[in-house]
Length: 215
Image 1 (spheres, rainbow, N blue to C red):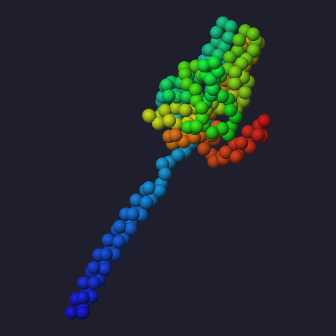
Image 2 (spheres, rainbow, N blue to C red):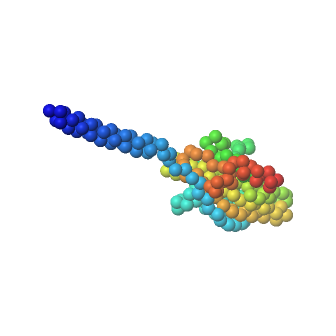
Image 3 (cartoon, rainbow, N blue to C red):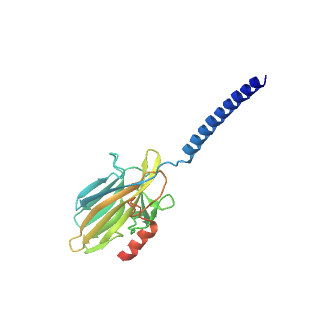
């Protein structure tokens, strides 16, 4: 009689423990899955693309085979223009408007480009122009290691990136030359990127220190 009672209790206890272990394991796996955030990283591409007079360059920020922006260096009879064209209506450039004309900012490293930044849109976002008065005008007039802040769509989601350029202008010839030296983008939608961040672990503070050292 006593033996039958002990066997019944052990069997019930074993089943209860097994059920508890299975439930705890399932809950643990579920919590682990929930606690793992979507991977976010910066993808950087080094390059050396010269954009001279009467030259275009198609920029594919995330290297998916689709052009996101087009650089156009247009030389006319008495002037030359360097501007950026968005390939999609929702693609924007970190910049400002003056008399309803969109212009691109030319920040140094360390500027956050994300949902709170101000973007301008259009087929011609101006960077620099040279003309017959032997003058060069624009935010990109003779600069080194400056960055275009960029917003572009992947599917229906906004992503942010940057393109680094050196730009020279010879006013006596109104000859403009831009050299694209690298570009990067943030893989996670709606997440900001900092100009100059290549994903190699540089903090905002280090980037800012680099800016100060470069002044």
